Amino acid sequence: MIEPYIDLLKDNLLFQGISPQNLDSMLSCLDARLAHYAREQAIFLAGDPPRWLGLVLSGAVQVVRDDIFGNRSILAKLLPGDLFGEAFACAEIDVLPVSVLPVTDCDVLLMNYRRIITTCPSSCSFHGRLIENMVRVLAQKNLNLNQKNEILSSRSIREKVMSSLSIQAAEHGSSRFRIPFDRQELADFLSVERSALSRELSAMKREGLISYFKNEFELHKP
Figure 1 (cartoon, rainbow, N blue to C red):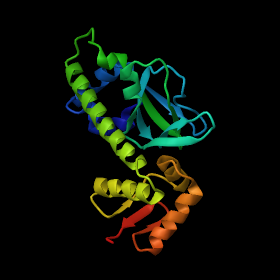
Figure 2 (cartoon, rainbow, N blue to C red):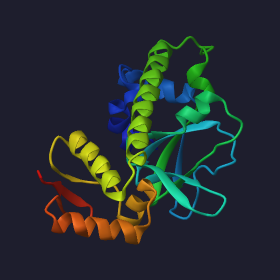
Figure 3 (cartoon, helix red, strand yellow):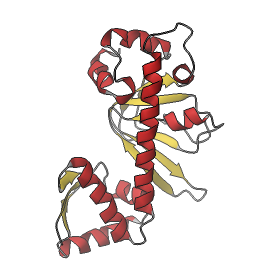
């Protein structure tokens, strides 16, 4: 079942340095299982115990947090090759503070995190490298979290937009790029109202700071 995604697994940071010959043995060691989710299903729900970490194989997934008033904030949108749940699982907290929801129908590889962070009884040759890779994954997620905090610490909607778009431009290595959000998702990611975001984007476009069409953006020098 996992054959269509072998190349994606080999290129993933978690599995770097692990030979393709060891891949099947490793997935068995991790109690890995392929799961399909329809758009209306939840992969993880806030309040669930964090037992699994996941790897998006196809489709798109969101990590969201809902407050007691029903307001939703998008913490991340994940595409094929992205991992989720690893920080909460490794922290060994009792319940998840966030939900992981499909944006589209998707395939996900679920792995038992205890099988990664504990010594393998079979003394698998790849296990030490797997733990090293997990540390690198957690470090990268920490950098991403710092970026999100930088965006949300901006005072105005315009500052949040420019901070977010500047990070996207740097990641793409170009002033012209495509963001992974539609308008409502971008508003939820920036923790602002959609109507206010739309007004600010229109104003920035009139002033020549940016141009955009749907989720394609270009930054212009002032």
